[in-house]
Structures are given as C-alpha cells and as structure tokens.
Image (tube, rainbow, N blue to C red; front, top):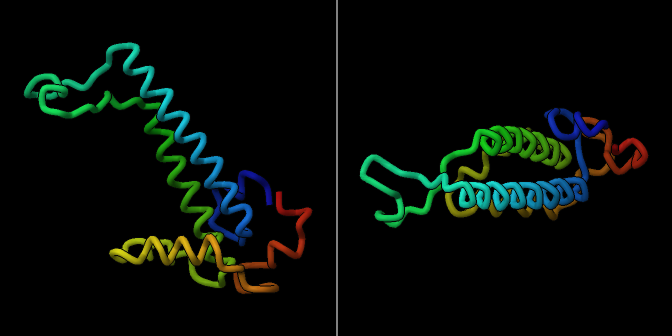
Length: 139
C-alpha cells in the first residue's frame, strides 16, 4: 500500500501500529501548525473584531481564520476518516462504524479501544488480506 493509498483511500486494512503512528504524526503537525499560525496572527495584529467591537472587550480571544489552516483541517479530516475506516476494516467491521463516535458518552471510548487496542482479525477477511502477513508491502 502506497502512502497516498494509506492516507486517502477507504479500502483495505491497516495495523494498529500504523494507526497510532498516523495520529501521533498528525498531532505534531496539527499542533505545530496551529501554534505557528496563532503566533503569526498575534505578531501581525490580526485580532478578531466583531460587530460589537473588539473581541477582547467581550472576553473572546479568537483570531482571524487563516485559509491555509482551513484547507489543512479539511484534508486532515479526510485522512483521519480514511485511516479509521481501514482500521475498522481490520476488525472485520464496516467503515460506517466511524459513526459510533456519535453515541453520547461511550462512542468515542468504544472507537478508541476497538481501533487503538484490539488486534485485527487474523488472516484474510472480506476487506482484504491481513496487513501483518506482508510487512514488506505495508508502505
């Protein structure tokens, strides 16, 4: 599986290792980008000013939206969904299980435990061969 297929395709299966590495790297990139863009806004005086005056007067500390950050956020959401769908496939469940997070209180915990800690189905399943069988083709 190529890196493009890994990040953007909703087909196939991935290991827990790749799931955790993806979210670790994405967290560092997302956090660094957010931190950097936040400092850029402060340095350039691009504070939010609403219809009722400066935001700080109302206790709001928002910044003007940066289009680069918005595009990155949309791409990141697509990549997260693709990785989660493939992880659910490794558990031999439909990709629609990503919607389990919509269950109040327990949905996010269910997805976190099942995708992050429970091993995939051994051998092939209806979504493809086991990603552990051919480690050389993982990337």
